[in-house]
Image 1 (cartoon, rainbow, N blue to C red):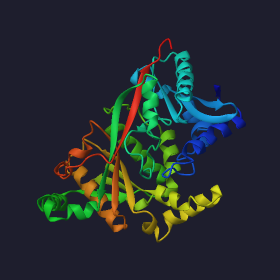
Image 2: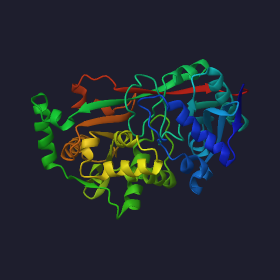
Image 3: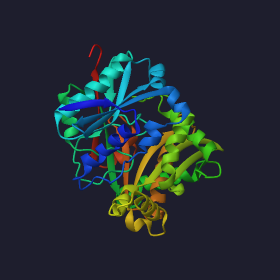
Image 4: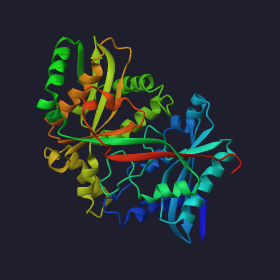
Length: 386
């Protein structure tokens, strides 16, 4: 008999965490630890985030055994900005049993419906800015840092419950991207790039630990300017920007946090995140969580990091469309490729790329016949009266 209980006590949160271990116990590509800090994100988020986001977590029990979990999320910042009556669900994990999935989704949708919301979309964990969607193609790969990884039956569970796909997004993989750009195939593009960049007034710098809050505010403003017309957008708050940056700081490579400036004004940002999941997988054999974390950090920050991590995930390409130099987007992409090679990485994966994004339509990338390396999907269903 499956029962679903709202998460309130410390014991409930322990059950919530235990579901992750149960689901991925036999997954050869699953990591031993949660990809996000559930305590900081769900149990005790920053006060500013609690003011704009209300969350209720649920756990499904088979007797006393935790077999599924979900979080229902009312993001009032999103609904106030978009005027759309949409609630979210996220942090979804469940065993391969539709009765478990149905009970969890019913509980989340009922909670959101009671708050007056007309539809439920997700997964968002807890928002589009953090992690979104379920993996719907080949799961037999190590998960990409910051992106979803899940059993492929999740999509079937959501669809059987009545959810419909509303948005796909992808990752694209490039091996030796700067070497590719320097190859004879792209000789004409490289010559054009060199002529344009030689006379350009665009300069590059990296984010600085010394001025991290100021640089984070620059990135937040660029994000809110760049993505305001994109699907699912709502303005990013200072608290949310700082919260995600705080989680990412341990694995960031400062040389791959690129700010472009035109005559001293910030006009673009592009970020490369070393694929620390490779380091986490290498450290997974340690029994202690503390030892796993310390070993992962040693791999990520050590001089021999590229012997463990060969890849970089690139994300948050933000370009101010009002910049007079129209070449800034191409320049920051090529500069990122150059730096990835200089830092010793040999693989780049761009994610998430929305299915209607212009990210892949640049002069260089449009010449490459590529299929997505991974596909992720977001679902939705009306819940009024459910």
